[in-house]
Image 1 (cartoon, rainbow, N blue to C red):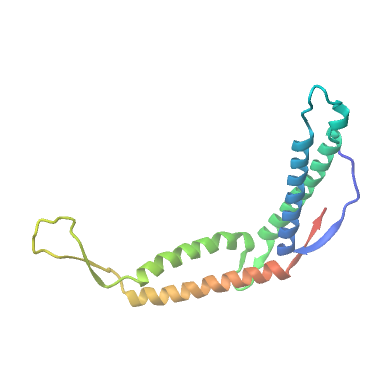
Image 2 (cartoon, one colour):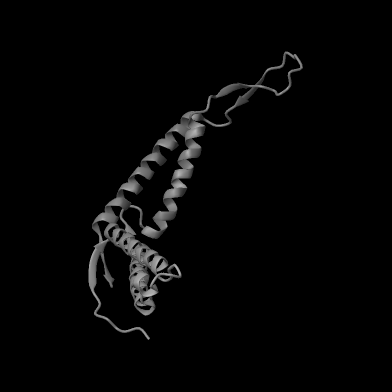
Length: 178
């Protein structure tokens, strides 16, 4: 049974919560490494086993790791709640939706960038070297200028979305009960 300890209420931004989460994950990794290095040991037959035994207490180690894991869960949960309930200004979507929207915008920008940079007509090799006089061309089947304009608009939207998300993540605070 877990003992109830005094809880600490923290007011943090998403950026601060992410930093806190990294610290707790580092703390957990350090405890796990300490346990791996001290839960068993090697001693030569002629050595006094007790003189080389590393300090290790199974229950204390379990309790310490459980405490840090609980903090990690609470921080992750608070971030998830924040991300699913906080609306991004000018976009009228939650942070969670924005985290899906940004990669979609990125993918569209990548595609449009290639289309924008295409030539209206380009010579292609036919793959046959039969010595024929036929020359093949690949044609853009769209208005390159229209794509360029759409790319510029989409690129601006992406930049604005990233900026407003960064602003929210670094200024809007929420509570974490650790």
